[in-house]
Length: 365
Image (cartoon, rainbow, N blue to C red):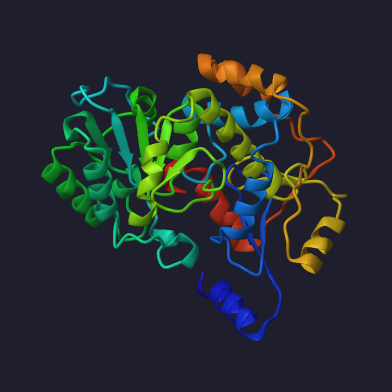
């Protein structure tokens, strides 16, 4: 990591244009960002905002709903990491007299210090205290779900310090705690919640798709999508009056459009670079190179797919399937990889590393 970072910083210091490359969320395509590293939010925010009011065709809506269905069915084998694969559904364990609020802190260690991910909170505990005090929430009806990542080691470190900090806060406030190593299904908790608190994590994807109110305490790739209530600092207090203004269907619609914009518009060459597994790829030997040329010239992302529907009719059909939670039907939309595509052949030691990774549990890769 230090080598690419050094090259990036040197290019920025010298004013040399560059494009960073990163693996995409669900494997297909390439994440290409001009003049910034893969954590930057400017370009993704622009593309997501540009398409948030444009209806999806049924094919587009099904394509992104299939990714969501794979998460709910736990068949999402193309994500680099997956957590709590043997999760168990359970009834809401807290009292439910008040607003059932699920708090899902994120594993944001990789974003720490990046300017696009800063907020006006001194820390997330201050943000939660502010939220609870201003909404006058009943802590007994709220749940803190510690991130499963905190119970795993990455190298020699785990998330014990983060879990300790959040758990101490929850106990002080009287909030029910589900630890990082517990097998409770976060997805089942989301389904039972009235609202979900996030600070940049992907739980907003599932929560919003189920029509749940999303309260965001931190920046994210979906912050311009229109479905979250933004609380990035005390100055955003008036936004709390927006809670409950959007209907569940409106939230779910905007989440579908965000997810399509991010995965199939912002990401580039989505149809040309296809993931077979997390380490094995196939590619179109004759892609359109002009898009990359324009990216290098203009320094702006062009949507990989610029099409959209004329009205919401087709989108509505998929939203109904989401509402009915017909995951198996939605998961049948994955497009096969064309037989003309060629396999990516990695060099030397990388092939050995990939072979080892293929034998590891997906959460450990």
